[in-house]
Length: 110
Image (cartoon, rainbow, N blue to C red; front, side, top):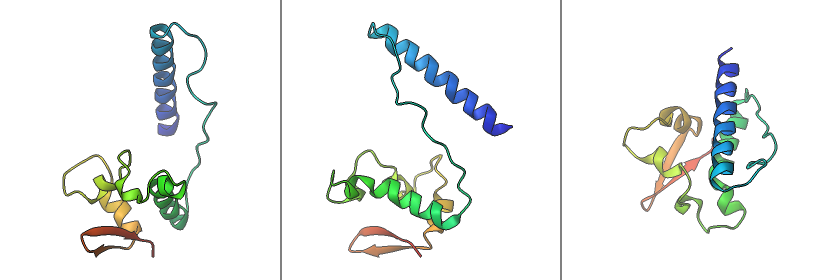
């Protein structure tokens, strides 16, 4: 039930956002790609690899030399001591440990 409520809230948000942009830009049609796929992740190893892939993606696709420097990533937020809405402890614990090498923190998948 909560999943349906959240999905409905996102649906309404995207519709409202699209309508506002279309009105502002005097255009019609979809702003977004067609429905994105949602999946339930029930495997810890898959979740760990997925989190790594999301953060390393800019480097994998050669948009930047080091994903830790990608300005649009939440990677740095996970390493800050500052409080946030991210589930830092949960995510970092999935990686088993953090390795500090010459002031560069690297996630180690174990």
